[in-house]
Image (cartoon, rainbow, N blue to C red; front, side):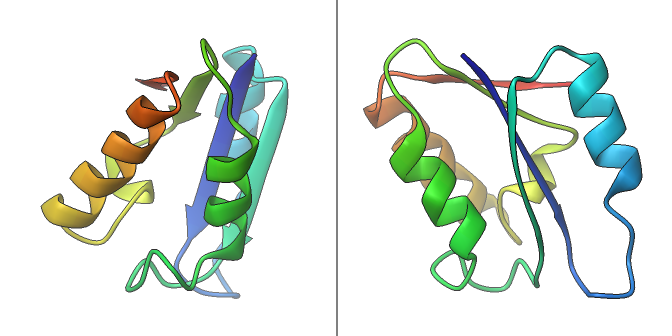
Length: 91
């Protein structure tokens, strides 16, 4: 299954561009949230997505920085995706 994750950093920002791009790329399920990327643990939709994904799923994001605030956060999240035997792609 192709799964999308969309995030903006604050309530007044808009997710529309990310969601439209994910849908256009064939994503079947989208997890979305409006929350700072400061802490991976404080992003409930990211946590739900990481629990949801299964072997052979493809996690898709518009940009890698949607997964974390810095290189270490992004790497840690990618490792969690790979531990589930899923892969990561971008639009």
